[in-house]
Length: 378
Image (cartoon, rainbow, N blue to C red):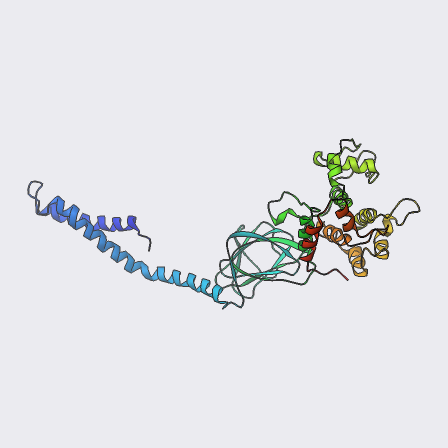
C-alpha cells in the first residue's frame, strides 16, 4: 500500500506535542528528563512506526474492498463470466465498423463515436455521458465526439446504425460482427491498390466513408480508374473554373482538356457540390469505354439501368442505388466492383487495363481482392 507520510507525520506530531508538554513540565533546559538524542533517535522513529501500523489497520478494509472489486471486474473479463471473450484496450483505440456491428462494454469501458451513427442499449445499471456530465437512456443515439462510460454493474451494447462508423474504445470490450455490406473492407482493398487514398483525418484510415461524396472526389476517382492520375497530377495546363482548390487544379485542368468534364457553368466546376449515383455511374461507364455523347450508349438519366444492362451492376445493386444515399462508402463500392466489369471493347476487365497501363500492380491487386469476403448486393 502507498505510504501516507503526511498523515502519519501529522498523527506523530500530535502525539509528540503531548509528550513535549510532559517533558517541559518535568525538567529544565539544563537538566531535561529525556535527552534530545533519545527523542530523535528512538522515540520519534518508534512513534512513526506505530502511527503507520494504526493507519494501515484503519484503512485496510477500504483498500481491500476496492482492490477486490477491481479484481472481480478483471476476472470476469478474463474468464468470460460476462458472456463473451473480452479484449482490453489500455488506451483509446479507433476501429472501423459497419452497419450492425456491436461493441459490448463492461464496467469502466469508455466509447467515443468519431464518425457515423451508433445506438446504445443496456438492460440495467447506467451509462454516463462523461463529456456532458449526465446519465443517458437506453435505446438512444450516440452523440459524435462525446465520451460514454459504462458504469458499475452495467453491460452496455454500442451498435453501428449507419453503413459505416468509426468508434474509439478504451477498457474491456467484446465485438459482434454483422453480415451487412463491408464498405470498410472494399476501401482497404482499393487503398492497397492505390485507388483510394482518403483524407487527412487522423482516424479510421482517413477513408471518410461516412462523408457525402463531392464532384471533385468523384472526378479524382474517375481519373484513377482510367489509370491517368499521375498524368493529371503532372499536367501544367490551365482551366477556367474559379472554385477549384489549389491541390485539385491540375486534375481538373487535365480532365477539362480531355473533355471529361465541362463543369456546372462556364466559371464554376462545382468542386464542393455533392455527386449522386447517376453522376458517378456516368464516370464509371465512361471509364469502361461507353459513351454518353449524342446518340451514344447511355445518358445521365438512364446510367444505372444501362450499367445493369452492360453487366456492370447486378439487379440488386441497381435497385439499391436507385434509393440509397450516396456517401463515399457507396462511391467506394461502385469503384471496387467496376474493376471486374468488362470493357466495352472486349479487351478484358477494367482492372486488366489498369494493370496493363502500369497503374496497378497485379500481385498487389490479387492479394488485396483475395482478402475481401464481403458479398455483392444481389
